[in-house]
Length: 98
Length: 542
Image (tube, rainbow over all chains, first blue to last red; front, side, top):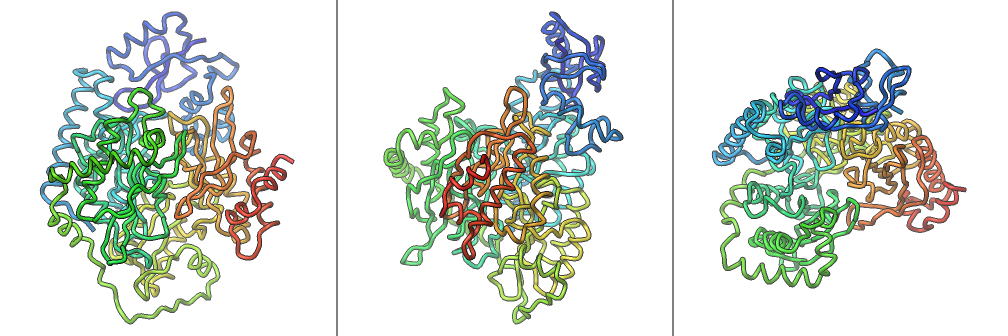
C-alpha cells in the first residue's frame, strides 16, 4: 500500500494521511493508491502539511507498517529514548522498528 | 572572552526580527516551502526526522555560564529537556516548533548567541582547540583569530553562496586537538625563528564520502594578512569549485584536481591582488578582540598538590584533567559519555549545573569539544574534589576521556534524515561491553557515523564505524587506523560489514588483538600501525 506522510507545518510533528486529515499515528494511515500525488499537492497548497511524500507500507496484524526502517523510526520516535516515543509506556515498542 | 559590541548585537537582533517576519509569512502562506527553506536553513533550522531541528552556533566552542544556562532554558522551554552537543562544537535541539523558532533566536540573542550560518553553503562556525588559553603548549591563544574569522565571515556577501559548505579550524599548538587538517581550511598559528607569529594554512581537508588530509599550502602567512590570505583561498574556490556536482563541490576536490601546486599558485596570485585592495580588517580591530581574551585572574603561589585518597576521584583526575599552563590549575573535561549513555546529550539540568560550576570554579568559562564533551578550562586544583563530587552526583563524572567509552557518535538514524543507520545504539552497546576494560585498553578513540557524510568522524577514529543501508537493513563497516592530530591518518575498512550485534563483537575482537600484541606503553593506534591490518582481519573474520 502507499501511505502519505509529512510534517506539520507549525510544529514539525510527523503526520500521516488518514483520509480526512493528518494523524500523529501511523496506524491511522490509509492506502492513498493512485490519488497520492493529488492529495499531496492539495494538502501542501493549503499548508495542512509540509514536505509530504508517499511511501510503501504493509497492513499487518498490528497495524500499518512502513517498509523502510527510517519511516518506522519516524512513526514511533527515537529508538534510544523510549520516553520520547509515541508509546512511552511500552518497552517493547522499539522492537517494531527493527 | 569576546563581548558583543553594538554592531554585533544590532546585527543579531535585526536578524531575529527578519526571521520572525519570514516565519510569519510562511505560516500565513505568503511564501512556499521552496522559498522558505533556504531562509530557515541560513538560520540553522532544519526539518529532521521527527520535527524541526535547530543548530545553535558556539563560536570556537566557547561559552560563558549565562550562555550555557540559556541553552538549558531553551531545552526546557522549547524542546524536550535536553540538547545534543555536536562534533562541530555546536548544540542541536531535536524537537523545535517552527512557530517558536523566532522566540528561541531572540532568547539566544539576549546572551550574544545565534544560529546564523550553521547551515547552507557558507562559512560555518569556526572551531578551535577546546583548551585554548589553558594549554601549556600553545604559542598564543587562537580564539581572537577565530573570532576575527567569525566577524569577517558573517554575512560575507561573496561567500554566502559557495559551491558547498565551508568549515574552518584554528589551532595554535603542535598538538592538534581540533582535527585541523580535516577541515576545508585549517590554520595553525606558529612562531618563526624571528619570534614573529604567523598562520600556516592547510587547505582542502575533509571527511565525508571522499576523505582527504589537507596539505600545507603556505607555512607562514603574517598574522596581519591572514584574513586576506583566507579570502584568496576562498575566492579561488568560489571561482572554480564544482557547482555542477554536489559530491565534487567541496574545496578538497578542487585542490586535489588542480593539484596542490596549481591551487597554491592561484591563491598566491589572488593574494597579491587582494593586498592591493585593502580587505584586511584594521589591526586595531584585532587588538580590540585580543583585549577581550585576557588571562583570568589566577591565584599565584597556590598548592599543586591534590589529595588522591578517593580512588574514583583519583581515576577521574588522572583521566579527565589536563595540565594547565598556570601552576595550581588544570583544565577539566566533563564527559558527556556515561556508560551506555547517548554521546553528546545533556539534560537541561545538567547544562544548568555545568553553568553553575563554571561560574564557581572556572572563571565563568566553558568549552564545547569536537568530541562532544564540555571543558571547564581553568579549575584550581584545590577545588577539584568538590567539583568532581558535584559532577558525579549529576552523572557527569565519568572518567573516560579518550577511552573506549568516550565515543563520538552522530545522531544517526534515530534523529537525522540523511542517516542510513543508527549510530547511538551501537555506541551504547560498545560502551556497555568494553567500558569495564577501559583502563586495560587505555587510549582508544572510537568514532561512529550513521552515513557517508561522516559527521561522526569515522575516518579519523582509531576504530571507526560507518553505518550503511543494505537493502533497507542497517549494516556497519569497520575501519581501523584513523587519527586526527599532528599525525592525521585515515582509517582503512577491514572488510565486509556487520549487523548491529556483529559490529560490537568485531570491536571487541579488535581490542583483543591490540591487548595481545601491545608492546610497552603502546596505544591501540600504535600497535595497529606497527603490526598492520592482517592480524586484526584474521581475528575479526577468522
